[in-house]
Length: 314
Image: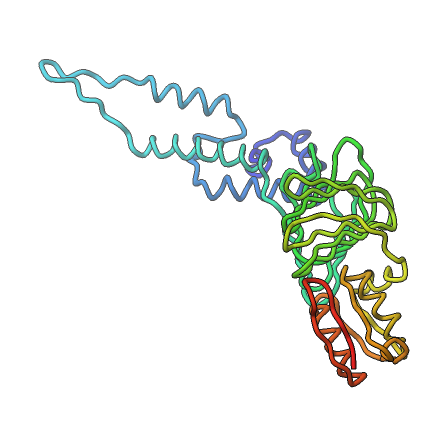
């Protein structure tokens, strides 16, 4: 690649590199990063990296050079510092290129005020919801497919039995081979809603497996994992990340909130049949804030009776 940049290749070799660069954006990025690293290393032109054997021979030749002895005096070894820096720069650049090729930097993707869909190198698709962040390991799709998630996201994972897809998220690791699911991260709970296939989750020494229409719940207070069924009626809410209701009975809304947030919402006498109309944003509003708003709309009181238990009553 450096020889191509310096235009020292013959015509067939030059054409071969051009075709390789044009094959994919990934190849073009590798080429550009390689040249950037090479140029920033300020290598002496005598030590071109595209001929490593020649560079090594010249390095050995310099190391083996013996200064002439001064008769009758202690032998003094002289050192050409300019040549020494050139040798050091050559070695440093070789190491930098080796590390870049074998340990590439992770990629980072962030969604701000709107959803962002990303297609990964293995053809898996990830939709990041508002304020979510995904970090993709530099060696992604080699031996494993590893990412780190902060926030809420929907995953549609390409099937590959030889390369498990692993998601690190807030004290819980999720591993799949090929499936679709949504991860919701909250203050009290982290939840994986499995839409298709099978998902394995681990936290500490616990491991659980969930299949389609089941959810894995991690209690952030004690790190305990549970598997429970969930109602498909919340799929649209998970997809849009918005609870938008119009003239919905409070008992129906309570059931939706219990499914979505893994809470228990008790209703006092006369509360069930009351109707509400409102809109809530999942990523920015907690269950407590939503329940407080419901209580205000129907002129009722609310309390949090336990870690995940709420009550609305007159």
